[in-house]
Image 1 (cartoon, helix red, strand yellow):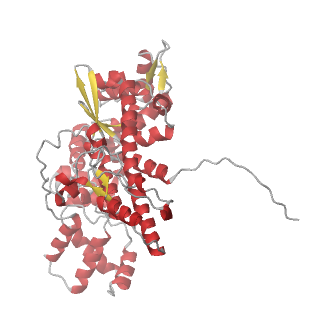
Image 2: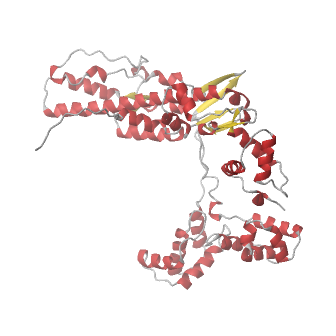
Image 3: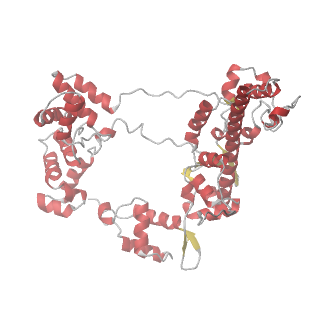
Length: 490
């Protein structure tokens, strides 16, 4: 027998506005412009005031309180579900942008940054291929090889796969010997080493383009061809015995090998592949007083469209209330809602960013005054979350993708968080301090006899940091410092 029950449940669900805020919070400044442009394209009820001022007189938009609503002359009983006052508001931009520092951008002439026009890595290879007299078939094979190279300039695909690619995609039938012949031609192109199938072949191509009558180059070829594993592991003593040479000769040979480019494909693109970092915050030191400002790009000049506001008011005052008109009102209401939610999310994003960064700045006051990493206090996400009264996940979203510009560099907020380590005196210090000591010790070590992890552990214990060797190894690896054997120099 079917039974019916009534049951109450408490469920926690995120509203669309909360989801939108969370997504906006984790967007870094460098991507915020793109996100705003996407919203402007999707929602015609949202306007960028900086763009609107290009087409409309400034006097049509007097500065008013953004919370002030238009007065409605009439009410309509048929449309009680729509409160017009909630959607008809002042045209002027919200004043939230004026609360944050504009970094002097408004007073300076905005100039376009010229971008250098240059050929890409693949275009450079295609131009070299065009200069070689080839049959149509060989040209197609060469283009297929060039198109199969990865960003490092290597040919990772097997020759047999290129045979199939040519047959199926271009209806060109070539055997492996013909492809090998064209690959040799491409390997003669610049940059040297392009078209190699592995690191060893890449280095050999570059060495064989040098003066092979030079004894140093000859022995470098022997090392790369026969003893590459010993070379990469820095077994220099073994190489001296195998080649019957002394340390001075080996030093010259190693210097020649280190001049080679292991990634020839990056040679022309290394300047364009750098990640652009735009700081979200700026901290300046004014005679011991830290001043925090928010990047002006985080305060876009957004407003609800005046034309949509007037459209909504016109529909509400209309005498005829048919189904199509109600659908039109519903559409306009949806767009106005979306625009208001987005502007509110941007405001909330700015407030959260400033609140979080201000707490971090005050917590790490000594560090931001001096710039010395040894002054960093142990700090975890919960410490900041408790101070600002927000969830740990909110602080994490801010710390993982935001940068702050100080007088001694630009840093990711995440880098200011660290775990605590207890010294022999019982004092708690940041593990950043230990990493700084390790970095200084390794930086000043004798490169002919680099310090092993055991020796580094002893040095730290002498300084009062009772840390295990495996912890030292973990910190060293976190700083991308190789083991002692790989730090050894001739």
